[in-house]
Image 1 (tube, rainbow, N blue to C red):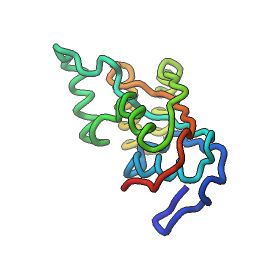
Image 2: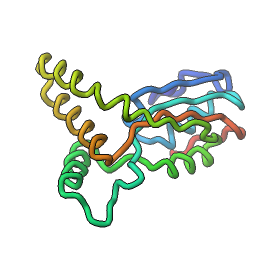
Image 3: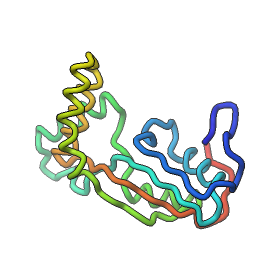
Length: 161
């Protein structure tokens, strides 16, 4: 939707935007949401997928194996992903409303074994390791993988930095 040089899309011209497996690569979710709201018409739709912490990701008595998974993932990829409540707040602040939350974790987890093998065959050991860590955090219920949908509800304002 935008580049360092500026926007690729004109304001309020689009009716839908779909971002799959990319939101966690953006330097700022707030900036992304601001730009998405700028280009979407009122009533427009935004859909994306992301990891969110599982509801019980911080147990009172931590499971050592779970704690190790959290540490290794955070060392490699940074801190945990935003919570669903944080997504709802970000949506409100940028002119969106969360309309769909679909946890697709159970259907996704079985695919990791195949993906990891393909990455290893291709000599992509770093990516295979990352896939293993993501699978572990899902299997140990550290996080969930969800599809989120948003409606553009209020007039767009300038994206926050």
